[in-house]
Each structure stands twice: as C-alpha cells, then as structure tokens.
Length: 242
Image (cartoon, rainbow, N blue to C red; front, side, top):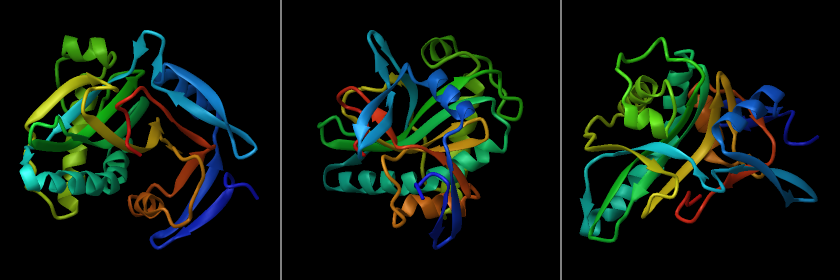
C-alpha cells in the first residue's frame, strides 16, 4: 500500500492519510504562484513554487522580542517548540470556517548583529472575509502584498498561535514585530509542515516517516486526517531551513 491511503499509528492516536484531492490541489494553486514537479523515488513529487518569474509570495512575519549573544540559541529552540505548537493554532483557526488557503510556520530572524528573534511566517489566500474572527479594517499595504480579505484573518491567526502557546504553559511571549515580507526576506529561516485548504489539511512531506513527531502533534491537535502526495516547497535562497 502506498503512504497515501494508510493509517499511521502515533503515540497520540491514529492519523489517516488520504490521497491529495482535486479540491486541495486547486487550493494549493491559489496560494502558490506555480505548481510543478520533480523526479522523486521513481516517480514525481509536487513542487510548491513560492516564486514564478517576477512573482514572489509575501507573508506576514511576526517576532517576539530579541535574544542577544549567547541566548540566541533560545530563539532557535523556541522556534522548534513553535513548530510543534503550530498544529494546535491551525486547528483553532480551521474551526473558524476560513474560506481560503493558509500556510504557517515558525521562523527565526538572525541578521548577524548579535541578536536573534523567533516568530512565525504566515502566507494566506482568502476567497472571502473571515466571519468568525477579530474585527479589523483592511490595511491597504497588507492586502496589496498578502491578498484581499486577509487583514482580520491574519490578526486572528496570530491570536490563535498565541493561544496555542498558552495551552502549552507559555504565556510570556510579547509580540514586538509584525510586518508583511517576501518569502526570501533576508536572514529569515522558516519551518512549515502543513497547508490548510479550507478544512482540508495537506501534509507537506516528500515521504512519510512514522517516527516524525509532527504526526503525533497533528493528532493531539485534533487534526487526525491529512491529505498527502509526495511534495515540498520550492523557494528562493533564504527560504525554509527544513
């Protein structure tokens, strides 16, 4: 049996893996500038290209304080923790009934000036405004770069991330930076694992490893069914570290 169409046993319970649906593929094409393929394991994998010619994806970058000198490693560890909390944030956001596509991951900004910052990178395509979220007037600069109907949805998602951390016992983060930026923003590395297409959860992996801790984190968050085909991000230099 192929990986798509099987059940993975995790410490948190079973994760059902379904083949990528036409609806999910269509949604991915709405968010990413281009979908392509590359040769993988005797077949083909789906390439989620974040640049196509002069078109580069823009997202919202958040940052929480700064860690200087020897404490820079704390920021990197916090980002890894954030990566494991992200399924809970996505699960909260999915329950709001968002009509669109969301890619969100943990990120680290390390400009090489003695200080390092952890946060999130959030990419979004909205088909309609988010009805169940924070009220906010559209910010022209955000919506021009990230997309229409995204201001309130982005701010709402940031609060869902914050709540996911608080559920893990950490309520000491203070949001200090929030800005639209391109996927190849200098000195930023980011780590993402899933894309939400409406209520569908698309796992971004070239292969599925039963020992992958992210699989258990998905189940713990209540996301016990994912759609999958071998896939990965195709990004310009300075994109995801993993």
